Amino acid sequence: MKPIPRPAEPGEFLPENYFRRLSLSELFTREAPLEVDLGSGDGSFALAMARQFPDRNFLAVERLLGRVRKTCKRATEARLPNLRVLRLEARYTVEWLLPHASVSRLHLLFPDPWPKVRHHRRRLINAEFLGALSKVLVPAGDFLFKTDHEDYFEWATDKLSLSKYFQSIAWDDQCGELSQYPQTDFEAQWLAEGRSVHKLRARNVST
View 1 (tube, rainbow, N blue to C red):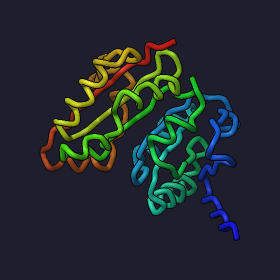
View 2 (spheres, one colour):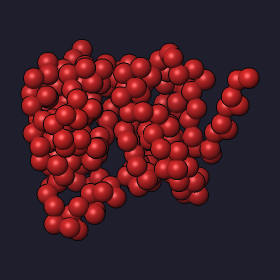
View 3 (cartoon, one colour):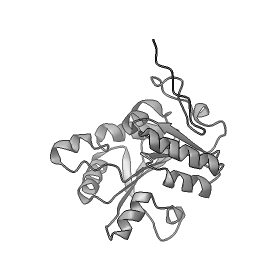
View 4 (tube, rainbow, N blue to C red):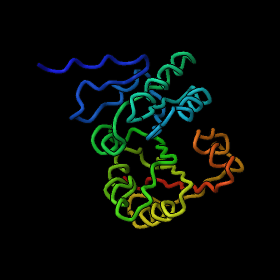
């Protein structure tokens, strides 16, 4: 017997087919810039962004079902039609599911740094991921990365410097739009503990 599909939570996006690339119209019926929060955790960042920028669409991608349900519940209670939640592994989402040239900004905020050397191969940022990401981002779209782990920051900086698809640019905290961005739950925790937060911003230069 085939397993019975799990019903979608309110605000959750369940693809009809996980083995083909999506179209933008499947994700959102309205046309608006799309931002993706990859590995969205408890959804705090995506929820705050959706409230703050109602003229944009937001897709929160999270693997753990409990976190997905929590985010969906909060989005429904806050009446945020511009936020949808996808339960899926981050790498697969970028490499196989998201539409090409569809994402204006992709946020990767405080991912697992896999600190042990033997686990570095599990780190999300590598040449293959950046190549796939360049196809998903619109031309001149942004990749925004934050971590409290200095070694992972240096790793990501090195991978981006070697990529022909991206050019590192300044992350301006003092003025402009990025200064208005909310903190994630992890960021607030790390800053409260006196830890440093490292940031990278890279622009898609592929055509």
